[in-house]
Each structure stands twice: as structure tokens, then as C-alpha cells.
Image (cartoon, rainbow, N blue to C red; front, top):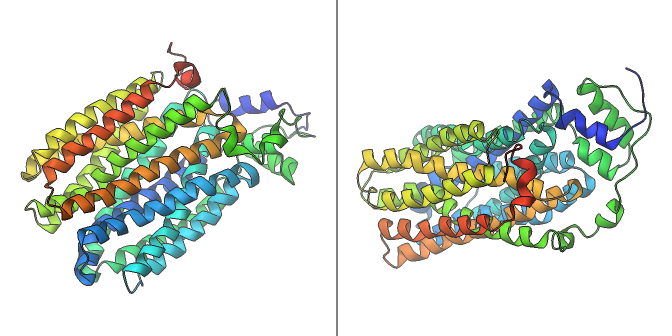
Length: 450
């Protein structure tokens, strides 16, 4: 191929305006696989909760701490590893974090007590948190404008897909070999993702032309060849202030033009994830406490995730050419209403499963919308940082939800009371999302008037 002078706008148009190439599609699929790790990692603790609790005689509060330990790690990974992805590269951080997850999951399967397992859950969560912020941004950066809404939402479908497929496998493994086998399985699967990332996920074009790390020209030309485009003889001029931004990324999220959107998206993630992780983390346990068998409780958890897959895929294709912000608000409102309905269906298996499918679909659709909207709130050199801190703030809500639930269970709260209480979190998230200026998200609304 001929070598030409580089122009940043023309290079970005390779991805933004042209049909997606095989390289881009594979990159999105690999990122979706990485998100499946998150789905399995969260649900595996939920599914193993009964076995762990029985073996070590844990109270509801201590079990809640175990359920939250991984989320603590995810928050730390999102907050403190994501900014490094904007400095050293998304791909480097993702590969390092996949290795951390593999080690943490494998060792969790050999833990000898509450404290050891809790610490390993934190370590595993750090890896997951670092992966998610960078992979979410990679999906947005490797997608064309025409398909960005859809690919971002399909990426989010990896979470319930990982939870469903992994949960079904974990249920069989736990029944035959005990709860430790579920963690060991997760470690092996995570390890297998390393070659997939190495071969299928190149460094993002936006990072290479914005940050221009060592060997950036060679890396850019390798990527251009994979995109079926001519190589370039020189890098484009770096964006204004790119160097100045590199050491102050978090502070720059609060500059005058970004502060309002940053504060509101943090609130949205916090309350959305509080309700989300209550539903997906505690439902199997709460339904068992309400009179269902342990197997029925696990079935309900898988049903929620199945609904999440269906809802997210439907949302993904509806999002193409529609107002994603508005669709996300509707999902939060309907999800809140269904939590109230589920509160009074929790003692009837057939009704609970039916409502659970739709409720899982709404919850995951709302999450998909947030993952699609957030990256475009920020310029390219702040995207991993902005996404990471938004997810990190959300993880704090996710951390508090299981701990609070465990404490309330110890105080005698019944499942209906808990579901009604957490329905409010979705309403608060909807209000915060509504307050974000439409002008900040208009680039993602697929040319529909905001």
C-alpha cells in the first residue's frame, strides 16, 4: 500500500464514516467476551453464596461483605487503573488486568477462610474494573457512527450472557464438585481470554493519534493495514493540550464544560448500580429465604440474566437511529415499576420467573444505555478516565447495596420490603440522567433531533 501523510480527521473517518471492517468487528466481539467475565465474576459469588455460607457459618452481614468485596476491587480498578489506560494504552491495561483476573479467580477456588476469599475477591475485582473502563471505550472507538449505539449495547449484553452461561455451568459444577469448582472454572476461562485479546484487539486508533506513545507510527501503520487502508509516512500533529492533559486527567473531568455532565453521570451510575447489583446479587438468596429451594433460587438468577440478554439485544437494535438517552430513561422507569411487582411475586415461582425476565431486560437495557452514552461525554484523551470514574462511582453504589441488604436481612426485613425500597434507586438514576444536557449526548443520538 502507498504511504501518505497523516491527517487526524481523515484517519478517524476510517472508523467513523466507513463500513466496519473485520478487524473492527473482531475487536468489538473480543470486548464483549471481556464483559462476559464481569457477568460471570459477579454472579459466581451469588451462586456460591449458599455453599460458602454453610461451610464457614457466615451471617447475612458477613455474606454481604463477601458479595461486596469484588465490587470494592472493581471500583478501585475503575478509578485508578482507567486513567493509566489514557496514558499507556487501553490494550496494555486490558491484558494486564485479564492476567490479574485469572490469578484471582483460580486462587479463590483454593481459599481457606472468609478473610482470604474476601481479599482475593478484591484482587479479582481490581482486574475486572480495569478491563471494563478500557473495553467500553474501545468498543466506542472501533465502531462507526452508524453502528456505535448498537455495538455499545451489544457489548453490554456480554454481562448477562456471561452471567447466564457461566451461571448455568457453575450450577452444574457446584452440584457435583462444590462451590470452589466454580471459581476454578472462571480462572481457566479468564486465562483463555489472554490470547484472544493479544490477537484480536489492537490498540485504538484514537489513542495512537492523540497520545502518540513510543513506536506509535509503526503501531498505527499495523492497524491501518488491518483496516485495509494505506499506511502513513508520519503521525498527525498532536491535539492541542494533549501533553498538558496527561498528568491531570481526573481533575479535567471537572472543568467548566464537563463538570455538570460528570456529576450527573456519576449520580446516575451510583443509583443505577445500587439497584442493579441488589437485584442480581441477592435475588437467588432472597427467593430461597422466601421459601423456594436453592435450585429454584439459582434458576431465578439465571432467568434474570436471560431476560437481560434478550432485553439488551432488543435495546441494541432499537438504539440504532433513536434517542438512546430517552430509551434509557424509559428502561429505568419500567425497571423500577417491575421491582415493585416482583416484590409481591417472590413467593410464586412461575410469576417470579415471568416478571424476572422482563425486569432483567429493563435493568440491562438501562445499563447498556449508560455504557453507550458515557464515552461521548468526553474527548478522546479523557474517555477511559471519564468512563472509569463513572463506573467507579457506580461500583460504590453496588458495594453499598449488598452490605445494606445483608444488614437489613439480619434486622428482619423480608424480600418484598427490600425490592420496594430498591425500586427508588432506579427512579433517582432516571432523574439524574434526565438532567444531563441533551447537547452533551447529541453526537450519539444517531442524527435524531434531541
